[in-house]
Length: 283
Image (cartoon, rainbow, N blue to C red):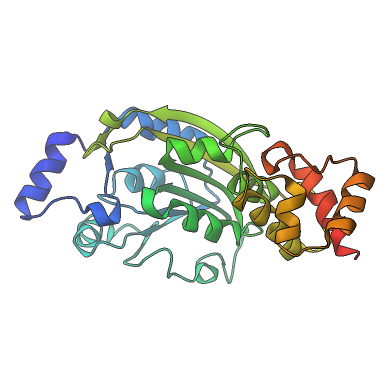
């Protein structure tokens, strides 16, 4: 759909795109081609589409895959999807909030002839991008990959390298379970209504094994979050305040690992955080 068609749809229904649901509709058909190419879709794939909207992507994807599970929280848009896809055997529609949806009920196939590959495609609402990302990562063993539209700033944080202001807990959390690739950046005019920020298309390919080996994942992520919560402070001071160990013990651990205590969280790579977590797990 183009700008005018979307305007006409909402005018006909006496409403407007809902800002609280992050409704910014993609109006550049060339981007659909980029999404399809990035998804590397096959006829054994089951695609979960988060925020199916008016079904433009749904229709194209359904031609290339085994099935599409299109999730849409807006009841008006869901009715449009029902009218369009109710007779399409490849499309399953769900009127649901993705954050409240139990994904395990979708990520299964009771009697597969060929085990399906689950992939996720989404134009994410910017206000809830991070919680959706964490939810998808919880199912990293079931999901093969995700192609996600999000705010450019968030995408840059995910692919950031150590040492920069964008690098943080989100970078490490996603790197642990997935390989992230920035596919494209998009200006606001690619959407209706146009958002106030640039967007980016990001691909996450889930790893078969975590990027680093850690003995205690909960401790590892707690250390990472604590370190970046006070990212302007020296690493040693942040961890002492987080009560991971005493000042003396942390000094010894950091020295044994070759990590200078005055370094800040943003200078450590994921392997150094893993080594630190593993050392503290032995205390």
